[in-house]
Length: 329
Image (cartoon, rainbow, N blue to C red; front, top):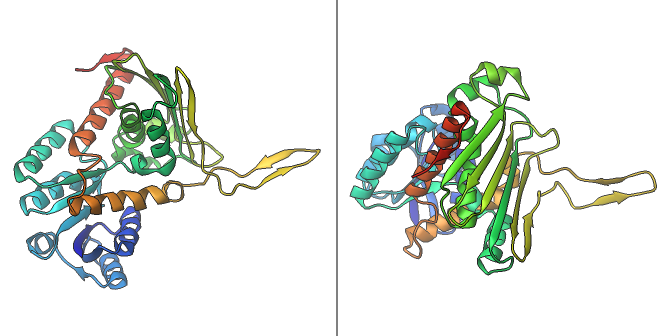
C-alpha cells in the first residue's frame, strides 16, 4: 500500500482524492491545504491526517505526493518533494514561467525521483484508442490533424487574470495532445485569436477565441480550434486524416438516445463539463501513476512533456503578438 500526501483540497484535489482512495494500492495519508477547514473535512472523509508541508515531506511513511494546489505553488512543491525523495504526481502546469519550469526539472533530475505531469487527456479512452489505431497503421501516413476544444461557458475575468492566458491555460492541453497523437514535435507555430465571446476577457488582457496551426517535420499540419464558449456543452473532438482514411473521436454525449420524427431529429448535447467528460481519464491517469510507483512503467507524461507544452504555448503568445509564424528549435 502506497501512502499519498495530497496537496490541495479544491475541485481537482477532490477528484484525485476519490481516485486515490478507490485504488487498492493507494491511500491518502496526509492532506495539506492553507484552508484548514477544508483540509480537516477531506482528511476526516478519508481517514487521513492534516499536516503542514514540512510534516508531510519529512514523514518517511509517505511514498508519493499528489499536487493539486494553486499553480504558483507547483514548482516549489515539486522541488521540495523531489529533495525529500518522494515520487511526484503534479497537475499541469509545472509553472507559467519556462525558466522556472527548467530550474525545477533540474532539481527533479538531480534527485532521481519519478515525476508524472497531469495532462489527463492522454489517458482518455477515446483519444488513446485513436492514437493506438494510428500507430497500428490504420490510416497510413498522417496528413492533417484537427483538434477542437471549446468550453461550455467563459471563466470569470478574475480567473483569466491569473490563468496565464488562453494558450497557457486552455490550449496547452491541445498542444500536448498534438505531440502525443502524432509522436513528433512541431517545427513552427502560427497562432491567431480575438476576443469574440466576452469583452471582460479582453479587458483582463486575454483572448477567448483562437486558431493555432502547427507544422511538423513529417509535413503534417495540425489545426487547434479553441473557444471559451460553445453554448451547447463541453466540445472535445479530434480528427486525424491520413493517406488511407480518417480517424475521428467525437464528443461524449449526455446520453445516446436520439429522437427522430416527421418534424425533427434530436440528439443529446455533449457532456457539460471537464469533470464529467474526462472522469475515466482521471481514473486511468492515477492507475498509470500507481504502475509508475510499482516500477512497472516509466511516466507517460514527463516533466519534459510539461516543459515542451509550455514552450509551444509561449510560442503561440509570441506569434499572436507579432502576427508572424514562430520557428521552433
